[in-house]
Image 1: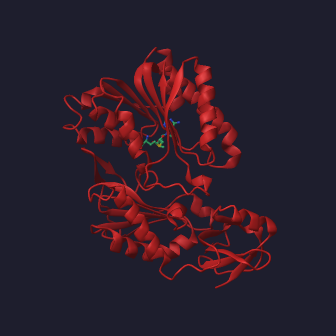
Image 2: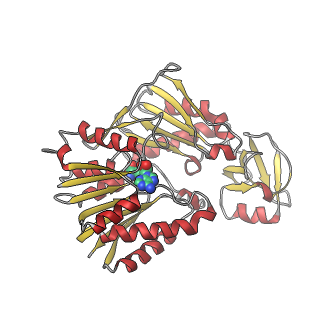
Image 3: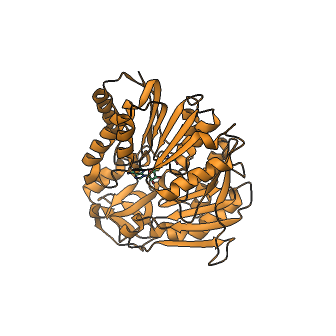
Length: 402
Ligand SMILES: C[S@@+](CC[C@H](N)C(=O)[O-])C[C@H]1O[C@@H](n2cnc3c(N)ncnc32)[C@H](O)[C@@H]1O
């Protein structure tokens, strides 16, 4: 195995526990792209091992810290641990859905694996992850308590380009080339929703908000609910099932709204009497729609605001913070007295305390008395590696508004 020697700055960074080693912190050495390499302090002491990339600014993604090389079966062990963790959280019902592997936080850098019922969807973001793909699928098949019907490689995220890799979408098993299984149905609580694993966002669905939706629904009985940036409508759908008087779904993406509508229709029984008639769908820009509703004097018992990541790069953070502040000020103004604003940010460049500062400023702007009831992250199948702040990407605040 090859060893790369870090600069003094690289050593200090590696010893801080952050798992990514940047190319400009490597003083000497070369390794095989996509393979495991050791990295050492300037005095030659081995500090850890990682998957090497020559094309990316992130040259090494750590798989093991310390002098010992990882065992030959490190992938299989990590997969088994990750599956055991999901089992502990009760997430392995064969008809349900969860994230099985969350990249660095589950110890397999660059690789995400979600499963929707018995369909597995992989996302490889690095060459190292590409090389591990077949091993990971075999290890998942061995560790899961149910058989996988199909496996899709949905490696089409823009981040692949930073690694010099082409996007790729291909069925690895269960679906013949040129064919499509159509939407995959998933059960969550008593609800059924469909996931477009080939064309939907990310791997098809936002699994990270699962528990936040359940908590938001507790405030929905009898309330008017506004679900802004609704995607396939799962916040609103849970609210409907909890007895919301009305749900208004807002998204600028027509296909997302169609999915939301289809999900409501799919759950006609669970949504209670007249469920579909209690829903409205607005294709609109979130900011424009929040302003329009405010000018029309509308009020809601629950407002959900779950926009896309505003700051995909560090230099976008300042503008993103202004955008979050404005949207949240408008959303707070729409809350009825005693109402709840459930507001999220999934920009990993905006750290949890910074998003809280933005909400504080929006609360001040709004002139309302705002109480922070909960400050949450993603569901536990999206673990956070504490030494990788970027893995705490989802923030979700529950704000009671007076
Ligand atoms: C993070 S996702 C929402 C996830 C969803 N709330 C859930 O629980 O699954 C962001 C959504 O915002 C929508 N979106 C992006 N820009 C928007 C805009 N300017 N106005 C309205 N919707 C927007 C996207 O189409 C996407 O559906």
